[in-house]
Length: 257
View 1: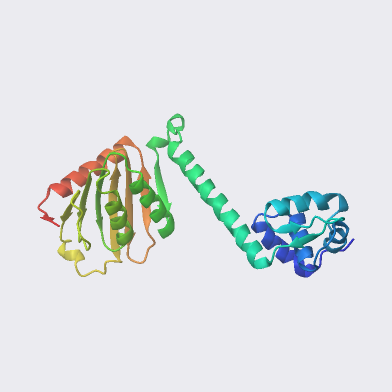
View 2: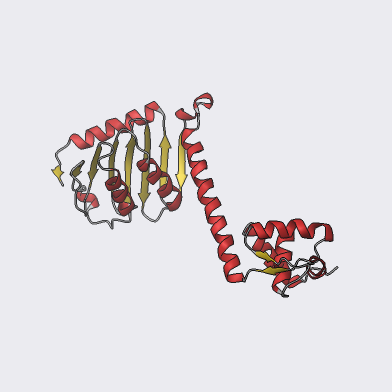
């Protein structure tokens, strides 16, 4: 029985990352070296135990990585790497999309009342984590969205998410500028920033308050060279405080966009 060459070890790990087992990877690599191999040949070339060769071949056939002849004895042929890897990637992407959908449903439907999580305030760090959480909140709003945001941080993503949601729920916005055509079902108030902030770069000071369904609140802060930080909570006190904050600012003199 052949031993696995060291040069194949990293390749085997790469194939395992694409969903193959160690034996499946070794058999596939072995079949690429020859044309029309029998099970005995595969055992000798790949180093996979004889008793495991046929079960492994069956799984590779199901994954469209191996074809089989109807001769006696049966002979097996590897699908060319270009087609084989493309198919593995399709399987991985399909599994990832299905897992994402199911996990998102579990995450949204989770029951946190027993642990008192609704009264906690969560800190979120990093551009991507904040972006993902905020856009998810906006996309899944069911009753209303009230927001104040200013500066350049995530402006395009926030604006796109609000426009996509227009007509589905009432949306009220207070911001320092609105750069795109205004959908008729979004109420936008444009307020000039204080004089002390007008000379600052949009990226140096930014942030916002996002109230979703009057039940959830997310506050985003960006200051100077520090990374963005966000606070998220479903606490009634937290939501009520920032709801009053939103009402106070929105009731001040404003210019309709």
